[in-house]
Image (cartoon, rainbow, N blue to C red; front, side):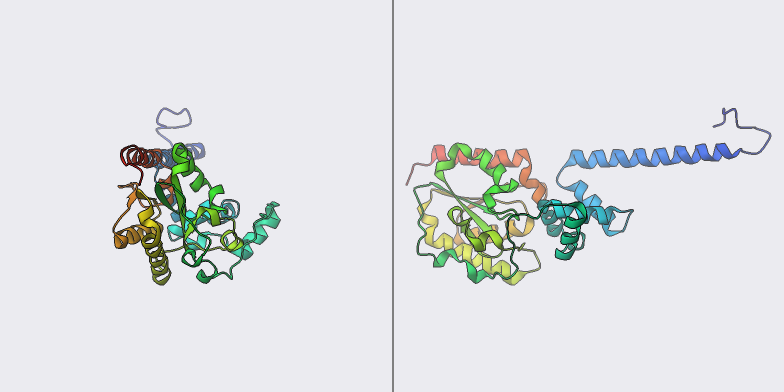
Length: 287
């Protein structure tokens, strides 16, 4: 600025000098912000989502409204926000319906019911359930997308375990029902409930733990190995507690960078699951 032709050492600053200084200041602020966002993206682990959610919670700009609108389209984003405790940033049912009208978003064919209870499905009461000749019991958390197998969280696990597909018996841990073997995913009560287990609901957590422990006591001995894959804090805690009470089973990844859904998709964590299954199935003789 000192060398600017509009600057007079012996006179007053011109208006354009102040505009230039303000523009330069704004440029530096935006540049710092961009560098910070790039760093968060590079770090992974959901740090960027946490940063955006905090700005939305503090009513910075129009971020809160934009994030709510995004949760109408992206159910997994809504689940991630709920798991982090940002329930108020997720569009509720009335918000979602209005946004669908405003944005012309088609309503899913999947019917959602808020009337289901844990008594609508209990694998321990099913007379038609049989374990096949699979060698590994794989326990993973439920998803908002249903059937679970159609969700992105389940598809990435299916991709890395495809080599051993016929040797894996998948059981999903539902926050509503506890263990749900894969063959029951298309039942109406499984496809239509809407419920996400949270850390605040201790009684429901205990119900899920109890049902999973009972399932393991009934069927666990029929498998060569019991493996859980969970990164979300609440669901991982439930699976770890059930495995501990039963006395067998390993939960992967063993040391996630953070307990959040985003870790579910981290390549190194999925590779850890794949390598563990390879070790188990190549070194353990069939029962």
